[in-house]
Length: 372
Image (cartoon, rainbow, N blue to C red; front, side, top):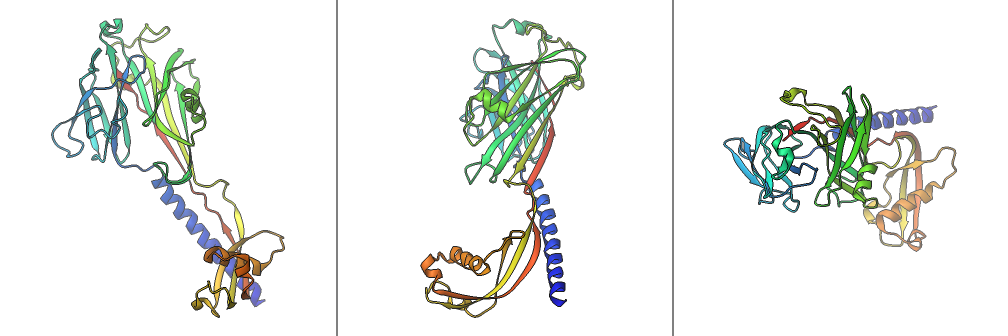
């Protein structure tokens, strides 16, 4: 009767401890898995969704000091993406609201005259500018504009320290919903961090229908199906002029009404290969009586030692072998060394544990930006 009570008490203690670990682990991981230092990325595109390098921008207030104005040029010293033409990233900046104006464009392009207002709050914020070629007929039309949605993607597995995030499995699903009463045509392409850009992909979306852009779609358009982990940005553009057959025209449209689509990015991260499940735990108390191998510290002899080992249900196992296998792993013992070690099992208690799910999800609504 006493032994049965002892077993029940052990199970209760293990369960309570496991639940606390699950809750703590989820809270920490959900708050940290996508956490990044505050940064601002400025992407420059041409009217056909290609990156345009060499542009210069003014940011107010200064994102590093919080006062005055700040000027940044593509590939300058403060640009942490200086190897990527058309992408400027400022890292380690202050949280706040910023107004960004394009002050100069590369040769052959006109400046996007629409200023962008954005908020940075302990995250990576993206702003997109669209430059029109000087010889383009689009430039002469005051109603020729486009709407751009830019979002981050993270796809694949990180097994060690080779990625920017902790080891785990990452996936991104970008959902687009056409809330208009007419068909909308959409262009999207992918830009890999410190890597290539894809060609634009055309989507035709009927009224009140939805489509998704997944990691598989991103890899396909990049021709990248083998690399373990890739990250970057997807750039989704809705042309608002008749030059793109079937496009829309929105003249003098209020900025609050330019959200043609509902665009949401859904991120998942999981560091476990299997789903959470209960496991039986054997807590084994034992003594080391003799060690002729000389590899186990003498301070470990003839004292009560404990080890907890997962156990299978209705399986016959060798408790002494489990302990010796654990000793072999900890002290690098060979089979010959193990034959020289004598142990005695003092007690075995049974508990139930739960593998906590090191899993996090994040949903982000993407706001549109109006391009010239």
